[in-house]
Image (cartoon, rainbow, N blue to C red; front, side):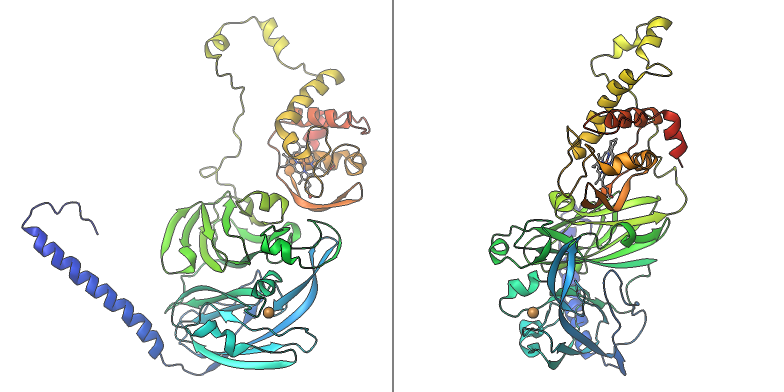
Length: 487
Ligand code: HEC
Ligand SMILES: [Cu+2]
């Protein structure tokens, strides 16, 4: 509503009346929708489709409200947090996050919660989509080897977190007991091409990040909110490398993103994408053109965007050490035609001389030009010099000044068996990037190196510099070798 043009005084009376009437109308309308939802009659019974992440059940579309039977089994089972690190997860339906539940406003949900007889502890469920004490927690308390049944009607459209609320609540959540339940509005959400289910969680282990073996939960660290792992979908690399999410250029993508916590708030961001629409906090308000959206612990957001350009999009918690050092990183791989109108890739890189505009324009002799340019076929010493410069500009941030890398995050380039084994592979990595698991000097790495946007000559120089330093095998890389790896 625009207030700006209402200057004439005598119109103010009308205006206030109008304002009053519209308020009355809207508040009345709101009351009616939730009252209506309560009164929606359910036709027939239906078994809910439950999916494990990153999958989402089929849309409810135009279907009428139903009596929806949700059958969920609690399982306590060992899983892998990251390579070589095991953890005993407590799960709703065998996955972290738990099974995705998709409902329609007015549905009467009959919830069957089963606690597997092999489990050691009692559990329950608190669904944020429930209007009622504890979100169902008391009614659903269930011991190992038992099943409880309770029912509720979904009245408010939106995306809601569910979690275990058995004491110690923090510990049950920290072990993975959370998931999402979607309540679709009348007529369903607008159609999109791809939908994914992603949930962040923080984990606290006796050992530090990457310390191998079966890791126990660490209560002290949890209380201090000193997380060892911050991950999407229960483990490091649940959606990277071969497990990446896939989409095509031109497709619309909808992410149902939740945050189980127990402690940390997520600054959810996709590198290289702008969210066209965000259903803020999973509710009915839509924000547009968003870069990073805050997802509270115990909250959610629905995020929509269209993929305009091919390539890799990296999902992160933009509290960025969590992404690169604690696991909060996932990937969407988008295939399709390049769209130069949207993204051209690197067009040109020139030398930037802030103080030197005038000097650069001074005419210099051909001879001088030739001398300042690297020679056609530079010798080893010259290549080393130029390569050192490229290294300092481009690689040093991750692989460190003496090529030593950073334990379990960035592999070493010094005395790297992986590097020395295969020069073409090393060239390929610099040109096209690398993700997925690799083993360097007996240590496993499963992270992402993005493609380095540098010329064939620079690649040749920097690799020559690396190969002739830090105990490596002395390979000399030529720009022809680099050219052969371009694709
Ligand atoms: C943003 C951080 C980052 C930058 C910048 C970076 N790398 Fe990497 N690099 C990585 C990561 C992470 C891996 C491991 C990828 C994986 O786990 O699959 C890697 C792996 C490698 C490997 C293979 C593994 C090994 O240790 O031998 C080589 C070779 C390599 N990088 C060379 C380079 C060179 C040369 C540059 C600069 C031109 C560079 N990298 C810049 C992060 C980076
Ligand atoms: Cu529990």
